[in-house]
Length: 188
Image 1 (spheres, one colour):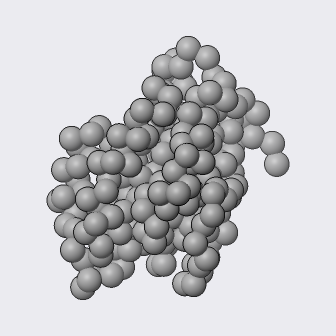
Image 2 (image 1 turned 90 degrees about the vertical axis):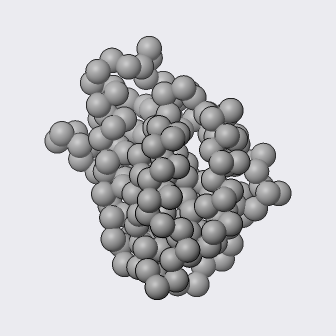
């Protein structure tokens, strides 16, 4: 299938927050409850339409372990968008966001779109991070914020569509000097 644009995405966050499950839910429309820990980076692909234009998304699911951080960083610069993911049932994954975000800002391109994802919102009885805390972190750092469930698929599609639409709008508004792979964007 041909496309008007190709956007590179990167998914980052601690191990076990559901990065691989988010990617799998979006690209393959399925949930895999038992998942091997990602080693390095795994790729998923899907094409969606924004304003009747086909846009191909290449989604890089990264390993959350510290030992793979240098590999993960090498993908930051070539991404148009980053999904910064935490688990609403594990406080430490939220507490680590500031470090992930700082690392991302140091290595990402200046036009990158950031979205903060609170995953596992289907587990409301186990919630330890409130929606308000996620929203506050997002507002303080200029991020889009959404809570999703990779398991139930709640808002997963919307998160990717909203982010893609934001990138597309930046292209339409001429906010890029050039469209090239250093911005994580390629013309089809």
